[in-house]
Amino acid sequence: MSRYVFRLPDLGEGTVSAEIVAWLVKPGDQVADGQPIAEMSTEKAVVELPSPVTGKVISLNGVPGDAIAVGNELIVFESADGAAAAVKSAAAPVPPEPPKPAADASDVRASPATRRRAREAGIDLNEVNGSGPRGRIEPQDLESALKKPAAANIAPPAAARPPSEPGAATEEIKVLGVRRVIAQRMSAAKRNIPHFSYVEEVDVTELEALRLHLIAHGGSGEAKLTMLPFLVAALVPVLQRFPQCNAHYDENRDTIIRFRAVHAGIATQTKDGLKVPVVRHAESLALQPLAAEIRRVTQAARDNSASREILTGSTITVTSLGKLGGIASTPIINAPEVAIIGVNRVAERVVVHHGAMAVRRIMNLSSSFDHRFVDGFDAAAMIQALKERLEHPAMIFIR
Image (cartoon, rainbow, N blue to C red; front, side, top):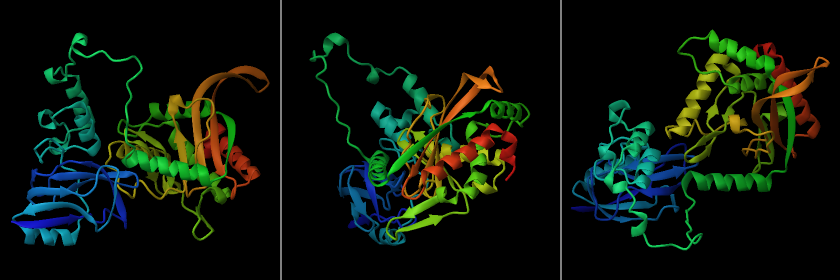
């Protein structure tokens, strides 16, 4: 037997450190080569690390929430194949697609989010039938299992539980992983960027009619046309006129970087918190391919399969809460960008249209800008240009 020290490998694109989200093993556990041993958070992605050897866990370095630098000791094993392990450690491969968590079986396949949900609910994933590829347990499989009655999950009768003082219970939740990254980034953005917001209402009656018409005449395999593809398609030519809004601010070099390409960040709510997957080169995509790409990257963000490339590199962000979008909002800029376009809900309102009262479908745009680099006049002119294209949807197809 030999002692083998597993050091944190580079998890992709020059990552210098990663945060421990959860240990999947404990000292004394016997693990198999390739068995998931830890969940690590890098930027906005959570990945699983597989064991590089077959052996016994001797010690773990750190607790959930700790940041570990690449190359630093992560876990120590007692292994019979130390020589082979050394070769694997030198290669420091990026972890493959996660084999499933589970109490003792390394062949159960599921995402980190699904495993975490199972642990919280006390569900043994060995007992769940997976409907995904190669038996992978999908979120819906776990939800179905949670709905099944289980004796272990039945709470004791109220009389058997000790009485508690009303309102005395508290719950402490450590801020870890993606949620902590979100907190840090949002705090820095709000603290360092002098935001100003601009709200304008847009009549999307004609756009909604066009959207429904295209859906009715589209193919069965086409991506669903929501408002977002139309908005991004309309935004592309507008940014050609207002390049100062499709930009990054490099604070270290005190330099503004303007982009000809439009890499649209789509703010997406997930179980782990807000993520911003990126639709690259939106200017090169027609409406239907754009809708398909938005669906692809947002789904990847939600199911934790998004790569680092999908979650980085946006030049401007669009954020929408759909039906929960409210009347107005003040979105926080996704640094190092200098603008964010916020979409509020569509609602029928009585307005004056062509000199007469009419019921129209109205949607507000609530957008924020970095006042250091985008003047109020330019921000207003940009939103007005976007409004014009959305209110005359034929213009969306003219670039």
